[in-house]
Length: 242
Image 1 (spheres, helix red, strand yellow):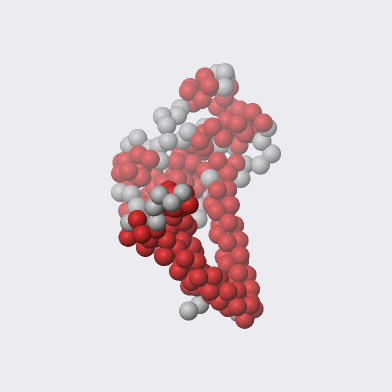
Image 2 (tube, helix red, strand yellow):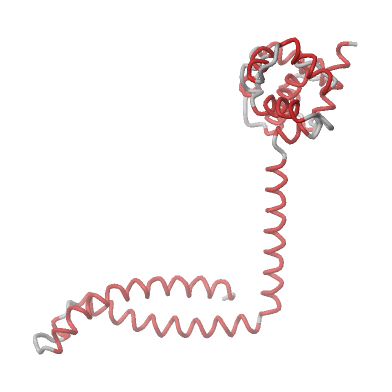
């Protein structure tokens, strides 16, 4: 039996022993006092209570022996156990790093990473677009939120990003759609809806024009899938206009 298996058995027996201690504590408080007073003897204790008492004492001896054996096993296997612990720590570090990267790989971070040296106001606007792309977001709605006129906001976004309002929004939605298609969990219709596209026909058309394949083909064929950036999609979108 390995040290880990010994430890599991040991902890299991300890839990049983502790449970029996609780029962026996009640037995002793009731019968032991009466015995000293000469009112009763242990013969008056029900058989199941006596059994609990005997089991506790037996388990006490077993767990003590197991504890000693476990310590001996750990001592003789301390080098291999140390290596195992290092492996576990290494695995934990890898998992933590993966989780940190996954948390950082939010739509907001992916979008902001595509635009550099923007002023604070436009950064907040782009962040809002990245967080609310699934909603019915339009230029007038965004202008009202940030207290700009639609005309001014359109020029402002164009000046700071180099793109008109509709292009970043559409490409943010497409970026999310690509992620959902790669996960291969949802039907194309649901991918379309959850990515903020209201018209599946338009979604399929723009997808085919930009990526050269249909959404269903991209979903099923791993060779077509690529970790696109927002800038790559924006450049592809701009190329359609030329």
